[in-house]
Structure formats: structure tokens, C-alpha cells
Length: 388
Image 1: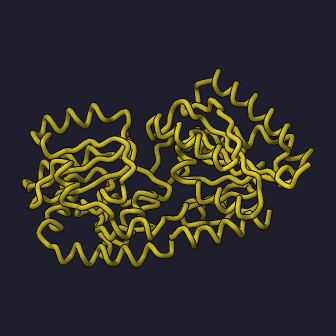
Image 2: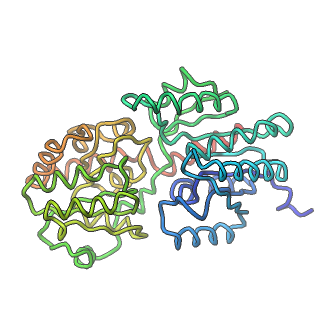
């Protein structure tokens, strides 16, 4: 048996492959540097928030790094019972075959399945379970049915969790008090690559021309899935109400795209709304914009918001859990209630009219985000893995 075969094995798993691609490659880097053989299990076929071309590229990149991939049909819908049953069978099989030192799981459905399927191997093989909660579905202000459905599931699964990682302060305080993981810890997100986002590489005039944005226009950007939860509609309404020459860049795709396009048509601003879909040059796109807008209804700790801060952008965002961990109101931007269209419109107007304020907000954010860098988070994760 060669030395590579003798490496202890760990599994990184999530509901969909894009979650590992976008949020967990730094963790995989840490694990490989510590001498682990890393496996990945996720759905590589559906539910991803990047396009299928990128998912296929990602799968090939993992293989090139010697990472074994398991394509498991974890659904994003908790009521997709057939896929859940198939995923359950596959998880149990790979746990038994590989005898992992520990499993690091992510996302609600993937995290629940991964932990429930590991109950026997935790007892027989001593496999440890690590779960990163990227924002509990139950939170202050969440609908009652979220609490009635999601909280009991997370509470039960916490009994089979050796390390519960929370990424914002509200979730950390709640988990410490009400959940039953062996250890609960706080890690401030997944880490942002400061060097990549601090400087754009493209010629900005060329990029704006490609997007159809005039040089003298004011541009705001949102990066993320086009969904009801992300609430991009409030920015469209605010732009329509502001009566200013504002262009809106939306990076990402999702089920709400058709509705958002229809809304922009109703407001007569289609020529100023740019739906870009998935883009690999997002670091340059931040630098092509003047302000980052993020009106989500709920978040864990948004990586795109951290990237915007690292890019030196001022921010307009919703006053919610996670966002409050990052943005200091009136120092790095403005925080508003997610549905307050008039407030977002007023904030846009203020930032359009005051370039010096935008610069101060952006500089504050660029300095504040240093504590959330990939290097800082990597050292924290190394410590957690080392304890296991």
C-alpha cells in the first residue's frame, strides 16, 4: 500500500456542487495541506446556482487534484422523497466503504442527510461530523412555519453533530443556548480573497461598453441567485422611483428572472437593467459598478457582500442577520428594512449625489473586511480540523 492510500480520508459534502465550488475550496485546500485524502459528495446534475458548464468544469478540476467525486442526487426540495431515499442509500454506502476520519457537511438538506446517515459509523468507526450552518432557516423575524418545521430537524440533528460551525453572531448565540452539538463555534464566514477583489483586471471602460452602460451613468450591482429570498425586485422599484440615470447589473440566474424582467418592462427601465447570468469575471464587474445593493430577506453571512466590501464598494443592504455582522450603518453604507422601497431609493439618491461619501464608505468596508479574509478563516478552520 503506497503512502497516498494510507492518508486519512475526509468527506466534504453539500446539497449541490456549486456550494462547494463557490464556498468551500479554501477548506479543501486546508485539508489537503494537512495530509488528508479529500472526497466530495454533492448533486452535480441539478439545483446548482452556477451553469452546468461550470459544474462540469469543477468536477474535472476536482479529479485533477486527486479528489474522488460522488454524484449524489440530493434535492433542494425536502419533499422529493425518491431522491432523498436514493441519497440516503448512497451516503450510507460511501461511509461504510471509506471509513472517513470526519465529514464536513453544508446546506440544510445535505447537512441533515449527511448527519442522519452517519449515526452508525459515528458509533462503529468513530467518524466525526462537522456541520457549517450557512444561516439557519429559523431566525428572529422568520415566519412561524419556518420555526415549526426547520428548528425541530436541526435540534434533532445537533445530537449527531460533533462540531457545529455558525457564521454569524445571531446563529451562534442561538445554537449555544438551544442546540445540542458537542461543540459550537463561530467562524466569520468562508473567507474572501482580498487580493483578487481589491483590484479589477479588466479595462473598465471596455467592460462598461460591453455591458451597454454609458461612461457617465451610475451603476449598481447585485451578485447572487435571482430568487424571492434575494429580493432584487426592491432595487428595481427603487431605481424606478429615484428618477436618476441608474443602471442595474444583476449577476446570477434563478427562478425569479422572468418576473424581474417583466417588472423592469413595467417600469420602463429595460435598457438600464442588465441580466448577466453566471459570470467568471465577477471581480472585474464589482469594479465596473459604483454601489453594491443587497436587499435579501435572510442571509447567513454573504460571500458576495464580503467580495463587494473587498472591492471597495459602498453598500445598500437589508438590515438583517448576517448583513449587520458586516456592514456598519452610515460608515460602510446604509441598512434598511428589506421592503422599504422609498428608503432604498433615498439611499441611492444620496450616493449618486455624493461621490466623496461613496469613497469613504468604500474605504471603510475595504479595511473592515480584512478580519474576514481567506487567510484568517483558513487558520481558524485548520484549528478546528486539527482538534478532530
